[in-house]
Length: 112
Length: 113
Image (cartoon, rainbow over all chains, first blue to last red; front, side):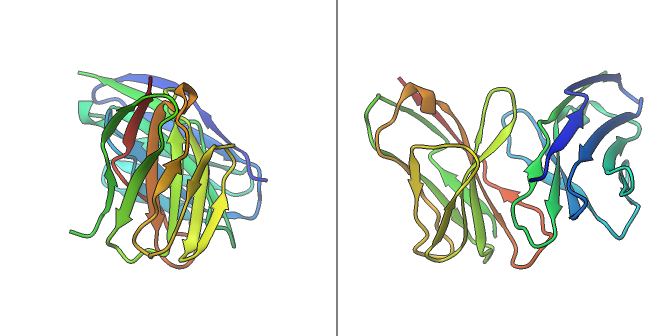
């Protein structure tokens, strides 16, 4: 089955810095890669996703890149703000499956 | 507003009690899921459903059961609660078709004493 590794488990940055969270996956059939943000005490929310036919996708300050050859994908947050502080989960979904495999989460702390 | 709703938000219950966690969605999604989220953040799939009368067990061994009699409703039942069931339970749903993300409910934080 699919295995998703997420690093780092904790990331601490100063406001205005960039943050990068990286995930690797094992199943070359995976073709959909969503990212979720979970603020303290709240539900996880889908913030960006990428499909395997695309190498990069941006939405304002966040971007996701995908390297299918190396089987890794990354979340990039630029100009971080305190409200970016949250736990971020990556996931990978193989074609024909409805059940994603989640990474173990990254706790991002943005210091004012 | 179209969303996914979980009740109760918090629940404290004694060992041995039977409880049902409610999950309903008004988005017309066919697929629904239950996850257990431990204090270390990790999400563990415990049950899922592809539609009415369809239920499957997930990766995490669980003493719970689910039912899917109506598209919008996917309750989770613990026949006999134990302290080891203390956790956050998240319900989620996703659109018909492949390659769609989840919409999560706000969760039920269960404490068994």
